[in-house]
Image 1 (spheres, rainbow, N blue to C red):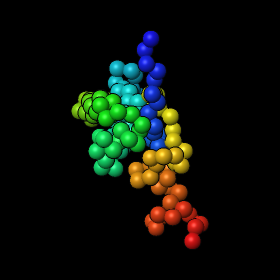
Image 2: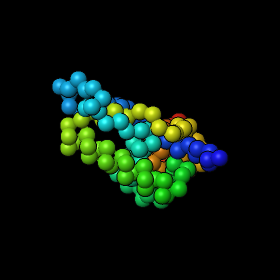
Image 3: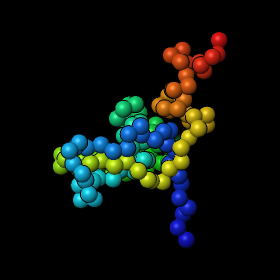
Length: 125
């Protein structure tokens, strides 16, 4: 019997889930599909500056799992950019965090939106 799936923790869905040439009505042959968990590795590692190990801790998976997800995500980004294909972000094996759980903090998009520059919850003195 296979191991049960371990869901990847994702802090937020992308504000836009479709990117690419604006003048293209893309069918499946002109699309690259990226999962939400692949998007999250790009966000955490490339945008937030986390290491793969830190990213793995945030997503509640092994570092080797993050490494594989990240490699696939980078390939899909490259295919979209180099070949002029639409990048569609959807699906995957993830659960959204509520911004309050363990491991949420720096890099958690939901928590950052609730916190002011001082690091205190909005409305706290």
